Amino acid sequence: GRPRQDGAVRVWDARAMGGCSSSGTAQMQRSGDDIRRNMGRAFAVEWCREGASIAVGYESGEVCFLDVRSSSTGPRGLDTRGVVKAHSDAVRALAWDPESLRLASCGDDGVTACHSGEVPVTTSASVHGENYARCVMWSSPREGV
Image (cartoon, rainbow, N blue to C red; front, side, top):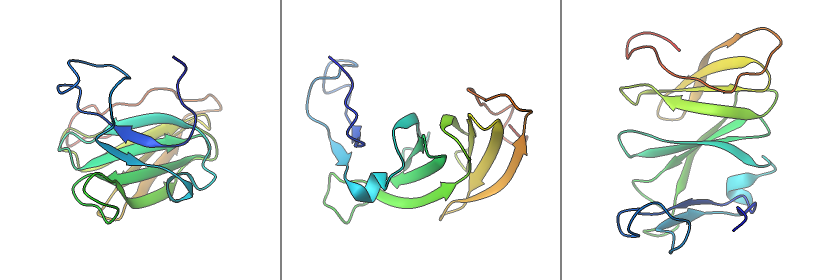
């Protein structure tokens, strides 16, 4: 089937579904204006290795951090921990560092940015020419992107 473009973020347990599949019932979901707020389509999603956060990169250049540990919307909800405006164009890739303390993002504006903190803030950003960036990864836990 066609992918949904409703702006919702959904989490499934692939083990309970017998593998990766788009069928089944989502275990957690967050949707509506509180998650999307005119951010446009989500182009990148990255699950934190520690399992506590999901980062979502939008075409607006914003990165939304969702907390999966607790929820004010019920046991199967996702709370927004923070939103950073790190890019002037679409976010295309996200990567948590090996220690799950920092998140790197890159996008169509050619910028690679680093975000950290309990309430996330952009701690550094660098421009890589006029070309867009579509992939980002960490070289080691103590080094940069």
